Image (cartoon, rainbow, N blue to C red; front, top):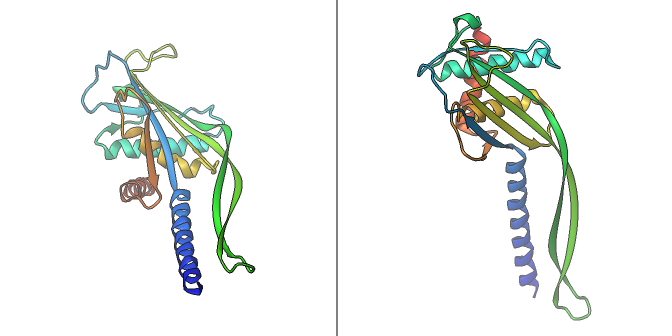
Length: 220
């Protein structure tokens, strides 16, 4: 009986280790949803010259400038020419980034613990249930792609990319890189449905992109 109890404790410890590894992995990842909408009248060069517009009236113009810089650098990495004047461009990209509402996630878990009944000497399973809740913030990025020719306030976009993510962090500086990378994975594509993506903080592809973006920003 004593041996069985020791083996059970070892198994329970192993399960707990796996559980904590899973929690750490999930807490260090960003889940993103992407939806691309493409108009029928996409008539542009294969690699158009693009002007990335920064709204001076944005609620945080400094953050908007940082996001515009990241978008420009990522476009350059993809082989596009980014110009500083709209008159030199074939296309214009506008964007909106911000925080939406919040949602509360309630989680319940049941754990069975074994105890030795001091009267019978037998192992008995005692189930216990724990409940926890967390608040998640909606972080979003919307990308708009227009033709530069005859561009005005009433122009209709050729492509719209909607990117959103829920997470505990409300730090847009932290999450903006994930949103940008996800959005431009389907640049000028009609995804036909919302696509789900998960990026780990140690994801090689994402870390390389982020490092290159940072490197270009510093060189500029």
